[in-house]
Length: 266
Image 1 (cartoon, rainbow, N blue to C red):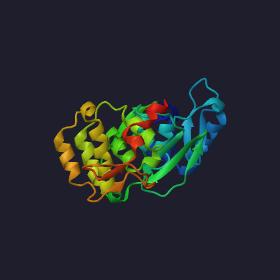
Image 2: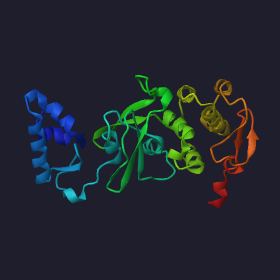
Image 3: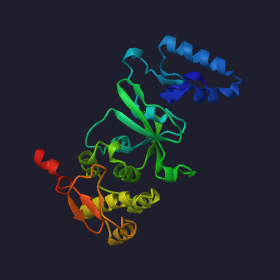
Image 4: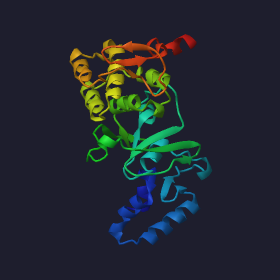
C-alpha cells in the first residue's frame, strides 16, 4: 500500500501498524521511521507521542488538528478497548461530556494527557483477565474514518455500576443509564454474573427494577440476578452512606439515589 493511501485511510495509527503494511516492500523499521519523520516535518502528519501519529486533513494546519479521542484511546495499547463512561459517551448515552477517557488493557500503563484530554488505562477485571475474549461484550465500530474497539452498551452499563467511580458517581451513572432506550438483557445479566460480584449483581438488579417498564425487563431476569445477590445487607458503595434497605437485593441505598434527589436540585 502506498503511503498516501495509508494516511488517507488511517486517521490515527502507530509506527508498528504503518511498518507492518510496508514490510511487504522489504522496508526496514528505520526506513519507516525516517519516512514518518519526513511526513511530520512536511505537515502531513502530527506526532501525538512516541510511535503514535495522526494524519493532518488536507488544507488544515498541523497546529489546528484535533485528534479524535476515541481513535486515540484505541491506539494507546495494542489491546485497548474504550470503556466505562467513555463507552457510554461514544454511544451518545452519557449525561455529561467528559474529557477523561478510560480504556481497558491487559497491560500496566500510565495515564496520558493529549490535547487537554486525559486517557486512563484500566486493567481488565480480574475474573475476565485470562479469558481469550476478555469476557465478551467488545465490539468494533467505524468512527471518524477509523475503527474503534469499544465495550458494548450492555457491558458499559454493567461496568459503570461495577465501578461507578469511573463514571462520576451515582448521579452521573443513573442519569446516563436512563438515556438508554433498549438493552440486550441476556448480555447484561451474563456480564453482571461474569464479574463475580454479588454487590454488582445487586446494583444491576436495582437499576433494572427501577426501570423495568422502560427497558421491558421480564421477571426471569430478576430471578436469575436474585440468586446471586448478597446474602446479607450491603451498602451501595464504600462510603457506607445510610439509606433504605431494599429487598430482595439486600442493598442499603441512600434516599438520594432511590428518589433521584438530583432532579429536585435541577
